[in-house]
Length: 58
View 1 (cartoon, helix red, strand yellow):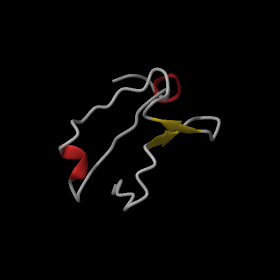
View 2 (view 1 turned 90 degrees about the vertical axis):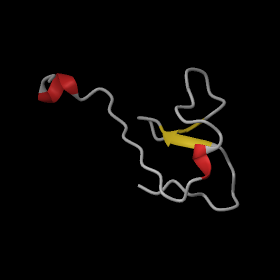
View 3 (view 1 turned 90 degrees about the horizontal axis):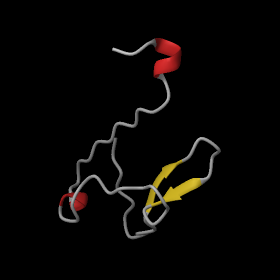
């Protein structure tokens, strides 16, 4: 998944379950990569939250 935002630099991290954008400055959000690795052209993100109750845990 390409997370490139071009020149917009709006700091958007993800969209929450309610459809509201979650910014990097929001409470409880942690940056997982350093500042230098966020400039890569190829980025990949995996978001896994709250699906174990439906599919079982492994």
